[in-house]
Structures are given as structure tokens and as C-alpha cells.
Length: 209
Image (cartoon, rainbow, N blue to C red; front, side, top):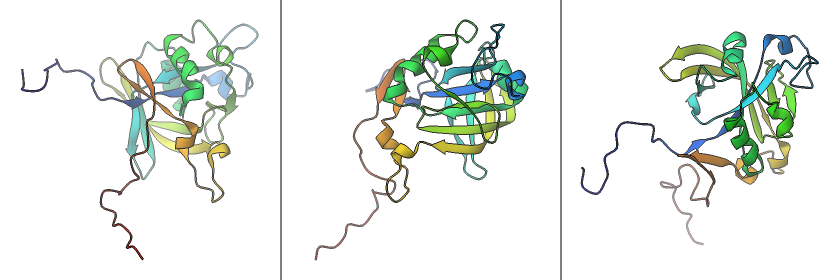
């Protein structure tokens, strides 16, 4: 045992992480079928929504992100078949829906309907995005990498949609006003107080007049 710390076996302890809602569609919905609902008249579910906490930014130019998904997830084969998905940021208002979409399967329930969320067809990809999310990011898969328990989907950002409720008079977007949430080792948290902006540690203080 190291002094001052307890030694654990190797595992995922990189927390907190964003808890996002990932939306995807099958090829039938991508051809324009049932664009306003998850199911057709036969009960076949063409779009789904699920929670992902293992996601992150990987590149600025081109803009890229990643999600890691277990192959047994209902949405996995939709993403694999179409190469498209959307990442939808969550906030306190979406906390309950975020948890529900992580513990319920699209095989059993229409999560859009149960969570009262609205699917909107993407502008650049045909996967839907969540109207109620403060930010929605349309993505195209560039690489699929099986890693073990999860498969990593690397994707290029095709479009971004931001709720104008969080724009100021200068057109600057303030995500903090949306009250985003994070996930840490089985628990959801609201973000705490602001500590500073990027570069504040080296910013010179203005001279007093």
C-alpha cells in the first residue's frame, strides 16, 4: 500500500465524465419512414436513444469525437450499419431521462415516448437528434475499433445545433446556463461553482488607476 493512498486493481477511475444521450436510426428510418415516431404500425422500432458516459473529444481539425459502446447494446448495430449517430448533451432538466435511457433497452420500450423527448432529423446525417438537448452534435463514423468489452467509434462532427435560449446579446453561447450534469462512479452530479476561465492562472491583473 502506498503512503496516503489505497491501491486498487486496474480499472476505469477516470471520473467525472459527461453523460450524453446518443441517438441513432436504422436504414428504414433513414429512407424517410416514420420520421416523426420511433415505431411503425407493426411495432418495429426504427430509432433509439441510449446513454453513453464513455465519450470524449479527440481532435480539433477535423472536429472529431468518440463514443464507446458495448456490442450487446440495442443501438450498436444501428450505428454499425449506418455509420451515423448524434451526441446530445444533457442537463439537470434531462437528468431523469438520461438515467432512464441508460437502464432501459430500446428492445423493450420506446424511450423517446417514455421520456417525452422529440426526435428531429439531422441536417447532415439522417440519425435524429434530441430537440430538448442544449447541444446536439451530428456525427459520421470514420473508424470502428473493437477493444474488448466495448467498441470505440471514432467520428467526425458533421453539424452542431445549439439551443438559442443560451445565447447572449452578442451571440455567445453559454453552456453553463443550461446547468449541465456529469456522471461519476454511478452517481449524477450538477456542476459546481465557476473557478475561472481558460488561462486565468497566467492572466495579468489589470493595473489600478
